[in-house]
Image (tube, rainbow, N blue to C red; front, top):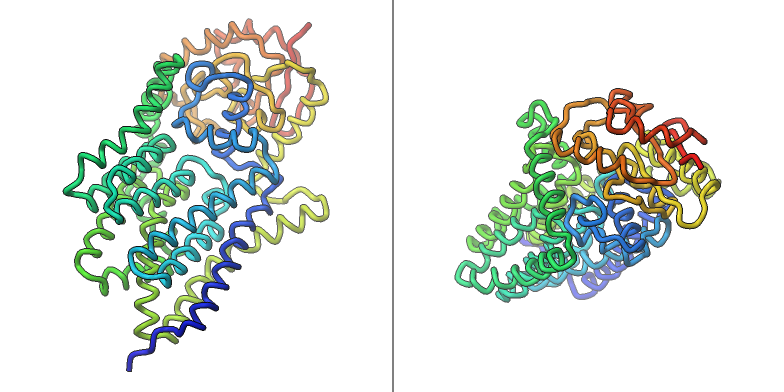
Length: 483
């Protein structure tokens, strides 16, 4: 016997629960207010450089699309509570778009489910994947907006938001392709909409003198990085990490399967193509980092919202129990981190957590630099420690502010390896660095990988003699230019 659809009173209770839980989940990231995570620190530091009057690509090396740095100008390039409130606001906006998309596609019930699922799974997963808002996370809003307008058959707007996404992450090309599945007969206006923000962004790069640097840093370095994955067995890694991700997102996977089985053929094709294209984007570079799977989150959230409603209509009790059990797994696994961090903050104790050791060291090093610094002082960091620029609010005085373009070794392997993917240009970059005169140098790499110490490179030895060691932390050496 078919279970009746929930009454309007039950719907009001569902709405109240969503209106409470979605903001609550978004605001839980405030527990991380005193930390900076890898990737987000790079973009916040880029915003700091911009606030110092420096143009990305032209005046400082920045190997990501420009809107990632622009986003953090909204909070003046600061860390702390403002950063986490900005992130929470972004999550709420994304949840609203998920609600609108699912509601217009089916009904308000799917909209409530989509908003809840997106808030839940941008909260209860690996902190390194869901807390920092870098290129993959910052594309969620334009991703959802593009598909929303594609579903509405408004191709120019769909293309425009896919183009905005491209200025956050080049994987937006897969969002554009997904929009094309919805708008197969309107590809020309779709491409026109995509071109508008992209041409505007590239026009800015050309007008500001940033175009050569943009091509070199975003595209040449980016393609070299993508082609030179450190993953030894990409197929096995891909299968393993995809299975791990689906395990913690089993509620989405199961509900999506229900949707694809029970929905009509037209929706099945569109949703299936959107999911497939998003997964191809995850596979790019064969690294399968946890945050790459954020590309897959929007289509699964939307499809799962429909699957949950269909399952409730068929077997309400079984669906309630099954959904509760599947959501309980990530909730139990990841909620203790928020509790622990909040408790540590309340008693003014630093987190005892291996994932944040580097960030805590940067906080200590930045505090020592601030004690020594005077207005107008500049900073260069050897290694990959962009959080130091955020905590000191200093900029570099040359194009380079970390050692990746100087050693040619990407940050995802330079703590243990020395094999360069960018050898020739890196040598020329070291010569250029040796002409600069930063007030402080922080060597955040030598103590971890002496084979990539700056003293190893002949071009830098004479330059380094101008500096003397003034302080140190467990992982960092702090040098100041001799008077």
